[in-house]
Image 1 (cartoon, rainbow, N blue to C red):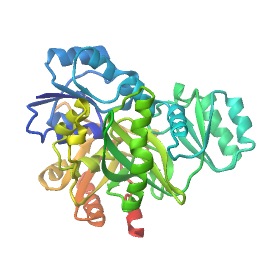
Image 2 (tube, rainbow, N blue to C red):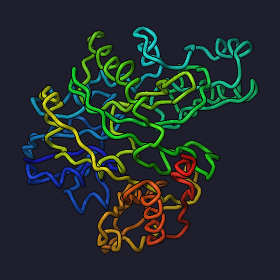
Image 3 (cartoon, rainbow, N blue to C red):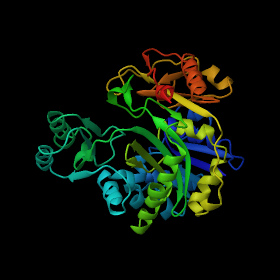
Length: 425
């Protein structure tokens, strides 16, 4: 089986690593990929939004199965383009990917089908939003309606901050057209948990839980990023929480999308807040989370291709999804200054040891090769996800930070408190 993966980050590297373990797979391609992915797959210089070129390549190369890793092409309708060409592809169609593509849509869906979430209001006009904020209870959360690389969410503690946030999103267009419409949401408190799931349109299978760290600095300070690290499983995702979510959130979401004529096949990522009143949905994503994928897939026992094919063929009910009874922690090594300004093209050393040691992984996010085609260089804000396994979370965390020190590059930056919350359990 020939497989094409669309994307270029740590998530796609983790997917490629897992796909490479399948005895079904004879050849992997990745468009456009990165230097780390090129060690597992043949990288082809086609952008994720170049749908016609992707489809043409898949036909010419006789690709048997395509996996879409990123949100932009899913929301843009890449799956529809592949299906129209008679190609087998994993991911939701455009009318289902709106679950992530529009915060307003997902909030309205939850309200209509009584799926637990924060109360909210939606605004297309900055002035209407300003007027609403005058009487709103603070703090509030402002969310750009469209895709904003995981960064279009602002927590505002007082009125002045909220007004400035509306200006930033709707008038200054910090995230472009994503801020044409915004959602103003009740601020919820509690533990955050990420739960990924496989969906075949009717059946949903839940993966192991994880927890991401979005802020750039220790102690959850600084700007929002695409993720600075994660751990799995979450000790806060208890059997009680799981039972509640299975009853009121997971299947309810799949059924709601089907009822709306938006059958969902692919990955639904549930961002949950464990409030005193019970679990609430913070957000949905329509693809594997990054860096959550980098701790979830290393713990998955199944052949990933069998699961992905079952989603497309609607036979997921026949899959027994299993995960190892261990833990994983991922520490993101970033370039100093991320997510604002940072240097690129800096040599990376120490990766060999990660490849040699069992239970340690380096998933490349922003890397490229030097002219010698052997030296890795930094090529992004988030450079690498260093993941380590352990018998429990504390062991995995210790291993991950030990491994993070094996890797060196100028201006290397990382948070030092990934998974620190587990110490409170």
